[in-house]
Image (cartoon, rainbow, N blue to C red; front, side, top):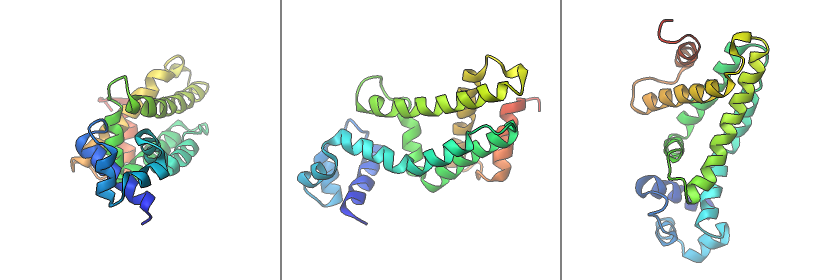
Length: 188
């Protein structure tokens, strides 16, 4: 593992354990076994480290997500593809995903808000566009695309939380059940 990777790894561990605001660069450098100048060399400052942490962990996710969220005139298949991307990402990178989910509820000021909010908005926008495109094939969906976007992401994240709690496995059956629950509600 490179020094940069160790710094990113230790930052994630400390940000999850102690919180971003409570974690100083000296603590991260110490945990990585390097001096502060090395951290500054790679990232410039703590916010640069946060940005690198987010972009490094989300890089592959964004590619897979954008492909899955491209509506192909089959709403069930598209939603299942999107759910599968989230589930696979949460299984491959559970520490990051759990931390990232919690960052969506960060205070509205500071680095976390400034860096994470645009990433959340990127998800909502792509999902809104998916549902807007689907509404052209399904007239009963017209005008509801934004609500569908955040409720679909909500049920996905609730399922991932259930996985983190050991309640489900995030397998193909869970993809189906999550999407079926979203599309048909509790009376399905």
